[in-house]
Length: 334
Ligand SMILES: NC(=O)c1ccc[n+]([C@@H]2O[C@H](COP(=O)([O-])OP(=O)(O)OC[C@H]3O[C@@H](n4cnc5c(N)ncnc54)[C@H](O)[C@@H]3O)[C@@H](O)[C@H]2O)c1
Image (cartoon, rainbow, N blue to C red; front, side, top):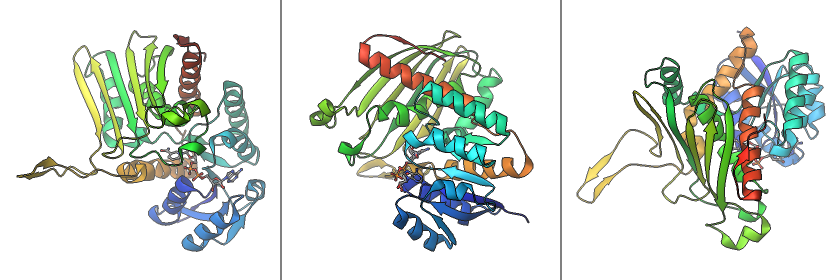
């Protein structure tokens, strides 16, 4: 079987997970090169995964003819220029969210990728969680009628290295998952306006340095639906991802903080195990998204979530930043 030969750009936390998926968890992929300016990161991962080629500069990986497709798992501000460079080098791209941090860059990415005719998939992993996928399908089939109210939340178990978190991360990198989830679960509707409340409730001492660690956002959609997205960087019980859609004919609830379906009933009470990491709670979703990407490259399928999906979620995040700055409702500019 011809394996899809993939290069990894960014050998940090999520790059290590994706690289391991490509090298070990999928049958139709091979990890052939790793690039990271912090060469030790790349070399360590390359030796673990038995990858021969290590590049400090991502342009050298992009110039490697053996590489058919790349995974971009670098810090957010580098994504748009790397996707553009990869597309111009005729490589298909899996890019972690956010695809860009402003709309001009997002539009550039979409145009360059379209002109190059390469695949682009964005790392919105919730679309690959079974129950979220099923919910979207049932919503499209009108099983619960027209969506009226929607909710999506993301909670991390612990706030580490708070001093190093770039400004607006809660919207651009965390809630962007929820914005995409809400867009996904309210198909064909367009986000119109947002009101965002955000604060540094976990580390109030860092508020003056720009940290926002807690946020609640209300989003109004073109079909009349109203959605709430919520994020916290510290929910001590574990990583937590959930969503809910209420329609005229019923309600769908998805997600859990439980790592599996076992519930422990003892005289001490009732409990279940939670996870400390997104890659544990959403393990299958992370693997499934990469499996889809490699199949799309192999069989020349149209890939998704698309650049347009990424732009729609980004537009909500940018409107949230406006809303916080003005302390009022902000229009979603698409
Ligand atoms: N989809 C998800 O659930 C999910 C989860 C975690 C992270 N992410 C996203 O993935 C991205 C990376 O996050 P992380 O937690 O792995 O960060 P990280 O800091 O652990 O890793 C980033 C790596 O990229 C390297 N790097 C920086 N600039 C580079 C460049 N120009 N070329 C190549 N490598 C470069 C760094 O040296 C580092 O090793 C972020 O955008 C983040 O939002 C997504």
